[in-house]
Image 1 (cartoon, rainbow, N blue to C red):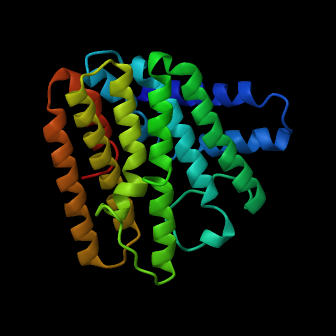
Image 2: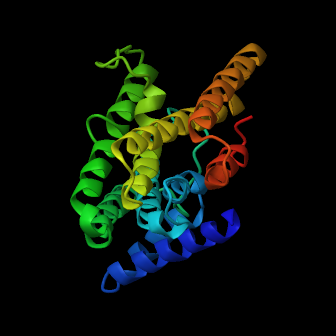
Length: 260
C-alpha cells in the first residue's frame, strides 16, 4: 500500500506541475520537475493519507494535502540551495541539476505558490482552512522562522524561540503537522482527532529531523542521544495512533523512515 501511494503521489505532483507551467520556458519547467523527482522525505507527505485513513476515511481522501505538503517541502528545500546557505543545512539533497541561485529562488517560489493554488482548487469545502494551515506551516510561526533562526545560530547568534518550541519543531515539525492535520480535516475528523493528528505530525517530523542530524554527527555519544530522542518521539506518536488496522499506514511510515 505504501509503495502504491508513493507512486500515486509522485505521478500526481508531476501532473500538477505540467498542467500549471505549459507556457513557461522549458528550462524552468524542467527545474520544477527536477525538484520533486528526488523524492526527498516523500513518505512524510503521505502522513496526510495515513491520517485520513486513521480518521475513518480512505487514504486517497487525504491525497490533496499530501500533494501540497510535497510541493511545499520541495519549494523550501530548493531555496536552501542558494549559496548564502552553504554549510548551514547539512544532508539536504541537491534538487537542481546545477547550482543556480536565481533559478533556486524562482523555482522555490513557484512550487510554494503552486501548492497554495492547488489547495485552493482541490480542498473542497475545506480549501480556505487548508490554505490557512499551509501558510502557517511555512510562515512566521513555522518553517521560515525556524530556518532563519538556524542561520543565526550558524552565525553565532543564539535566539530563543518566542513561544518556547524547539527549532526542529518549527522547521521540521510544522510541515508534517500540516500534512497530518490536513488529511484528518479532509476526512471530516472531530476537533479532538484533528488535534491528535496534528500532534502525530509534529512528533514524526521532529523525529525525522533528529535522525538526519545524527547521520551527520561525528560524536558517538551525540549520535546515541539523538537516536534516543527520536525513538522517544516516535513512541509518543505511536501511543496516540495506536495499533488498530486504521493506524497501519501511520506505523508503516514511522518504521520505514529509519527512525529507530
